[in-house]
Amino acid sequence: MKQNAFHRVMSYIDNDIVDAFLDIKSKKERKISSQRKTHSFLKWGSMAAVFCLVLATSLVLIFTHLGQNADPALTLPAGVDPAVTLPMGADPAFSLPTDADQILWYEKSNVLCDEDASMVTWRGIQVSEALYEALCRAENDRYLAVIVRYRTDERLNQYVFDGKSYLERERELDALRSLTNRYEMLQKEGEQLKFKERLYTEGLADGTKWTKDFYEERIAFYGESLLSEFIESGVFLAEKLENSLSQTRQQIREEEQKISDSIQSYDESVAPALVRAFEAYAVTAKNGTVYLFITPSALASLAVENKADYAMYLASRAGYEGHLSDAASPDIQDTVSGFACDKIVFDSLDTENLRPSNDEAVLRLLNETVEKWQYTCDCVEFTFYYRGVLTEEMFQEMRYAGIVQTDSPARMIVQVKYADINTEALKELSQMAEITSIHIAASTGSLPQPNAAEDPSSP
Image 1 (cartoon, helix red, strand yellow):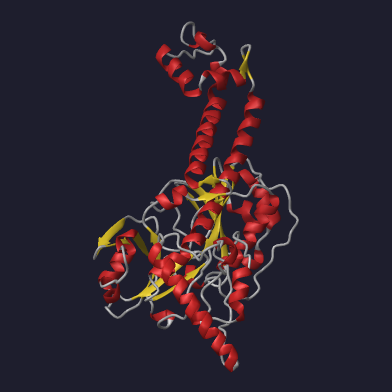
Image 2 (cartoon, rainbow, N blue to C red; image 1 turned 120 degrees about the vertical axis):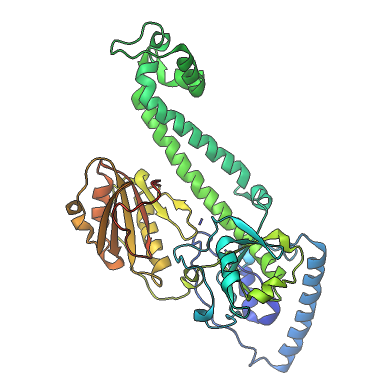
C-alpha cells in the first residue's frame, strides 16, 4: 500500500527548478508518473552562468549546513512543505548505471518488492530474504535494484496526516474492526440472546440451552451497552443492526483509505532525506519509493552514516518502470451503477487492499489498474470467492481470455483482456448471492492449476 523526490539539485539548476518548487502534484496516484525530459544548460548566456554559479554556491552552503545539523529523516530546506514542492516521478537527471536488462530485479512483477519477507542482517545491513539471496548469487559487479526505507516504524507511527497520527488511525481502525466483529456475531446470536437468562435456566423451545458460564462470556464479549442498543423489551432489532453494520463497514473503508493516504504522504516526506543519504550512489526517488542501484561489492562496503537505520528490499522492474510511458491506456467510461461495492477489493501496486465505496470508485480503480500495469501485462484477473455452486457458463459475459475454478478455496479465477472488460457483467456477478467477495488485480502470470495446494485464505 501499496511519492515525490527532491534531490540532485546541483545537477540540473535551470528555470524548471522554480516550477518544481511551486508544482502541487496529486498524492492520490500512488506509483503513477511520467518521465520528464532532461534539461540543458547549453543556451545560458555568460551573465546567466555567473548568476547560476552564485546560486549554486549558496545552495551548497545551505544544504550542507542543514544536513549537518538536522535529523536526517526530516531534513528539508527551511520553510519548504514537501507536499507542495517536491516534484512527482523520477529525477529527470537520473539514468540507470547499466542497461535495465542487466540489472537483477525481484522476479514477482506484481509488487514493488518482497516487503512482507523477514529481514536478514548482511554486513551490518538489514536486507530482505530475496535481496539476501540475490547478494549471495550475483557477481560482485552485477547491479541490483534495491528499495531503501527506514527501518523503524516510529517515524511512521508519529507521522500526522489530516490531523491524526498514523498510530491513532491504526487504533481507530482496529476499534472499528472489533465493532464489526461483534456486530457480525450478534447477527448470529441475537435471536437467542434476546431471551437473556432463560438461555441457561430453562432453555429455549427448540432445545437450545447454554451454560451459565458461556452466557456470561457472551454478555461480556458484546457489552451491556451494545446489547441494549439492539435488544429492546425482548425483541432483537435485526434491521437496525444490519444498518449499523453497513455504516461501520463504510467507516472501515474510509479509514483504510485514510491510512493508505497517510502512508503515501509519509513516503513523500522522507524520500528526499533517503536520497540525500545515498547520494554517493546511483539513487533516485519515484513516487515516494527510493530506488538504489548498487553492486554487491559496493553494498558490502556501503559508506553511509547509521546504515543500520535502513531496510533494503529487492525491487521489481514493474514497480520501477511500469508507469513511465505517456501512452494512452484503455479508458473505462461506463456509467454502470449498482455494483455490490462491499464485496469488491482491488489489489494496488503496493499490495494494499483498496475497497471502493461507490460505483464511480469501482470504475476509477479499474482504470487505475489498467493504467498501472499496461506495460507489464495485458489482462485483469478477477477472483470470485463463493459459496454454493458456480459454473463457467455464468461468466460468459465477462468475455474472458482464461478461466479456472478451484475448490479450496472455492473460487473462480477469470482473466480478461483490458479491451474486453465488461463492467455490466461484473456488476451482475457482484450482485449474485453466491459470490461473497471479488478480488481484482493485474494478471501477471498464468492461471493456477485447479485445486492445487495453496493458501486457503481469501481477501
